[in-house]
Image (tube, helix red, strand yellow):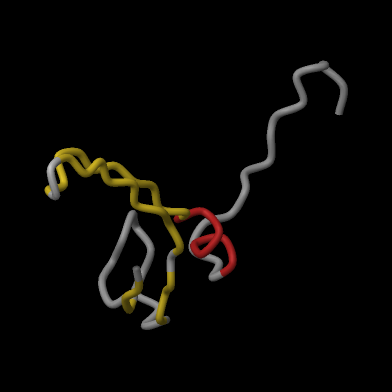
Length: 65
C-alpha cells in the first residue's frame, strides 16, 4: 500500500512524502470464491522511519532518576 501524505493526520502536518507500507493479506477460498479475508499492515516501520511517530520516554518506575 502506498500514498502521499497530503493532509493532516493525527495532528501531524502534511509532509508530501510518498509513504510505502508493507503487509499481508490472507484469504480463505471455498468453491473458487473468497469467503473470508483478513490481513495486517505494518504501519509502524514506515511512520517511524519518516519521523511521523516517535517513541515516548517511559517514566522511571523505580523511583530513581
